[in-house]
Amino acid sequence: MALPTGTTTEPRLLLDAKAVLVESPVWDADAAEWIWCDITPGVLHRTSADGTHDRTTQLPAPLASFQRRRGGGLIMALGDRIVTTDDEGGDLHEIAHLPHRHDGIRFNEGKCDPFGAFVVGAMDVTDEAPDGLMYRIGPDEAVTRLRGGFTTFNGLEWNDDGRTMWFTDTGVKTIFQAQWGPEGDLAEVVPFTSGGMHDGLVRDERGEFWGAIYGEGVVVHLDQDGDLIDRIEFPAPQLTGIAIGGPDMSTLLVGSARENMSDDELARAPLSGGLFTVELDRRGRESFLFG
Image (cartoon, rainbow, N blue to C red; front, side):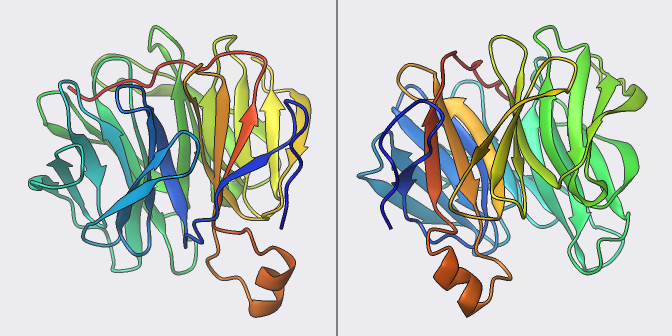
């Protein structure tokens, strides 16, 4: 299935990965690679900027999310564990085992804040009950439980000084905004924007947002107040993780999923589970590191 090669608002296929569920895309400028994971089988991928090379590492499934560590290596959320690894996903070391309320819950989205902490939340994969919790793993690897009541904890972002945080609960179709602080001081959580099953979220250099809508095959471009600027349609309905990177830091990478799709649905959207790129007219922000 060919994709258009035209303007900055048209998606291009980077890799027909046929992933079950793409999550946590991160640009590694040192290696000139996109790092991302396929949650369900627990596979870590490193994909070249042009999509011609893709190498993988098998980890304990599910591999929910990860981020880069200061000085090298990765911090990861597995099903109910927080671990560190080297850059390739080897030399696994457990930081914490955090049992969930029942077996149907697993960790989901996780990102690092400007203060070097890894913030991760959970989701209930059985019936989307509000059983998910949010945790903060500090630069010293201390674990703090922050908040509960999430159906599907997702898309995390911060402003540049770390005093404002945005996060998504996909199940209630809402992006929330909250005050944040160096020690995970979470306060005054209020809705930022609602409508659509928001999954991944990324903030650009202008303070505007790009959000992947799961189930609609659309990325929304939002202004600093959460109002819609534009919508970009993709040839895959279940959009997931999203990031800005690439050699010029102006490439929007959008992941997708094949999970729970019937044979008929996959026949209509055969690129589901692929990675797509869109060239933007602005740069992204360097991702924050753990530690």
